[in-house]
Length: 137
Image 1 (spheres, rainbow, N blue to C red):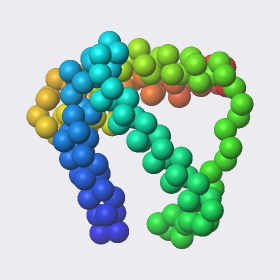
Image 2 (tube, rainbow, N blue to C red):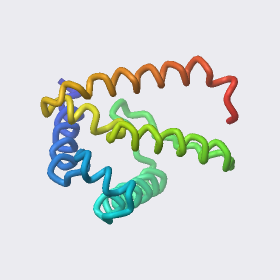
Image 3 (cartoon, helix red, strand yellow):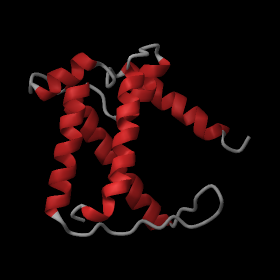
Image 4 (cartoon, helix red, strand yellow):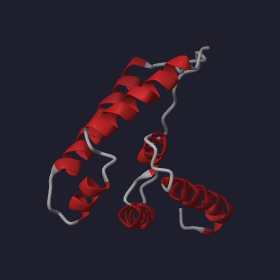
């Protein structure tokens, strides 16, 4: 019963993404064709929310739901890993028309063909786990 709040936040997040058209293939297509600012605006709001949230967590020593302090380590300075990872992520996003979060929203909305995208994402995650030690980090 303790996890119900997380399920509710997930439903609210899904509704917000759906209503803002962030899960729309057309909006994603517009973004990658540089035809619309819509998705870039959503991404900027998400990034700023994350930055502010992390700063608040660090400043107020926020604890997780089990009472343990949240510890956020600084990222290692490395350009190549972020460029390579961003390139792979962006190519997958452009080819499929969905990033990981909206996959579940689209399946929940009845777009069952997106199950194939979910399977591809899971296979890619598994392959990363297998190859992680051989990749540049």
